Length: 273
Image 1 (cartoon, rainbow, N blue to C red):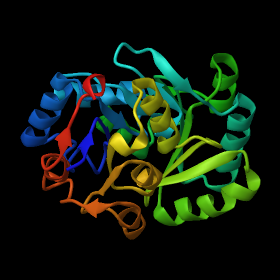
Image 2 (spheres, rainbow, N blue to C red):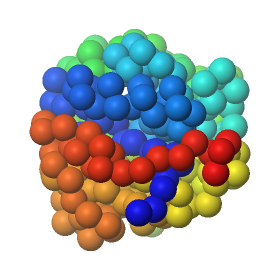
Image 3 (spheres, rainbow, N blue to C red):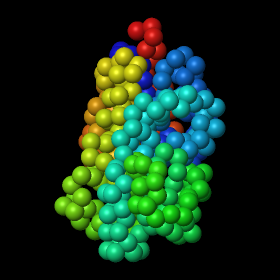
Image 4 (tube, rainbow, N blue to C red):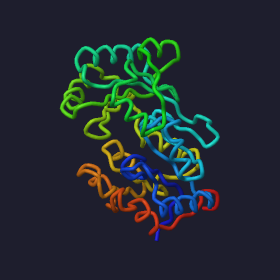
């Protein structure tokens, strides 16, 4: 039976159930892996601050892939990888969305700063409730000029509008990568940014080959990470494209899918391979 030495876990729709909780069985298993020295990496579209409620549930802190791959952060908050969108591009994107898709809630993440032109938009408030982050009222482009590159642009809104925007963005912004995390969310990052690319940086940091990695996910943004890992696990609630990228399909996120997948595996910490 193969042995694995690192775990990459998508968060929303994978590690968390619909109430945004980690199940007791999964929490206990992940804590045991962490205590044995096996890195448990949260791989999320959330910024670092948005992972804090999850670490509070897990009662430990591990490495993290944030902003859909634009950042990799170690447990001591040291930034291992950082790849953002230039401020001028963020400003042009903001104007494009405001002009063409006014029903969408638009925001941007710069490290732990979350900026939006309309912090009172109901979609922004729902996101704030989920992640525990509080938005700041600001024009994205001008604030990015002051603070630096934007790690992720986020559009939330009706599925039809999100689909239309997705189809039109690539020819207008070839320097950006558009990721559909769910039917009403569009995550936009710099070209070359993806979870699997940043996972490779963490594998190199721990001196591990991809064959020693397990990755679990449910969204199309996770498919590349599942293909990269030695064992790719699609959640039972994942769509057909994600299932096709995986080695096997586990239970849903409502039925302890992460626990079901990992509990059957053998793990060896990186330091004692």
